[in-house]
Image (cartoon, rainbow, N blue to C red; front, side, top):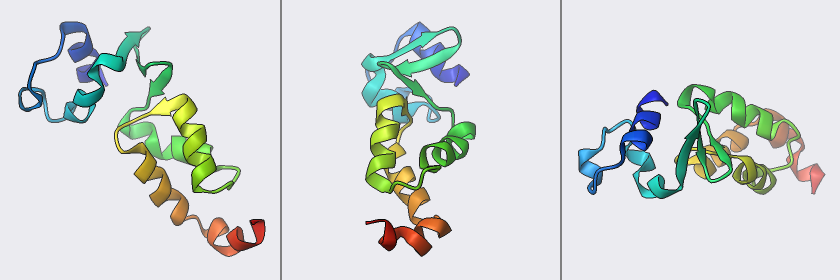
Length: 105
């Protein structure tokens, strides 16, 4: 996150190739990113660092409401590149949902 914060403060290059590989996934949304009190936001959504994504997905999926509900919930509050597919993959491996999912319909 420090590199991303620094890039936001210093400005972005015109070409994605010239941006550090670690923050390149944020290049397309660069105009929507801002920093405040050491946190990075995309609009009003908190950008989640890689190290906190698994815990964030666990919290989002805690109620076992399914992929669409979890995705909507996440899209309202948090962001990271590839978030939707990560949530789908995470929810699809949930043993509880696999066992009881069809009964919740």
